[in-house]
Length: 166
Image (cartoon, rainbow, N blue to C red; front, top):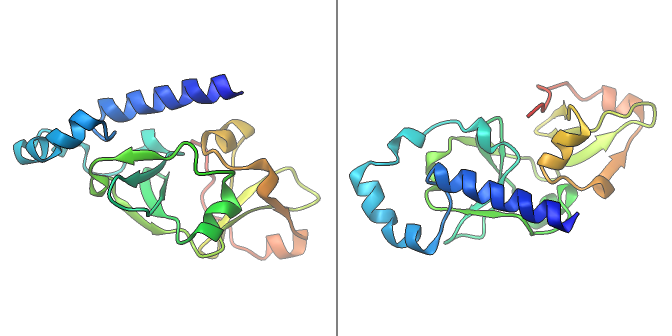
């Protein structure tokens, strides 16, 4: 499992580096030059290829989840640990503003399911979003131990949002 995570981390860094988003020492030093030249302007916008990444800048403690190709702020540590196991795997990004802002997850966002269904939902901002598969759940580094089982009546009362499928 640790080997798989290391491989996924390496692949993630490679993808981010290819997109000009990963913060390496050389990239950080050259960041102002690259921005001045406009060489990375084409990466502005949504980035569905980064879905599932937890990202932050090297100069701030704020952590974001990339969902629907947009960065979603995680409002506080308690909410972070409602969803994730640890701080491991957060990627540093040079210019986070090049990834569209999708707003924050709600304070207290959680993973939930009903006892009568295997579907796990990300519940945030007044909607529940089904997570399409175990592979997608793992891609987002959600923690299986953080899933809260709630009654079907309560979960059914929460409006559906788009399924998280990638």
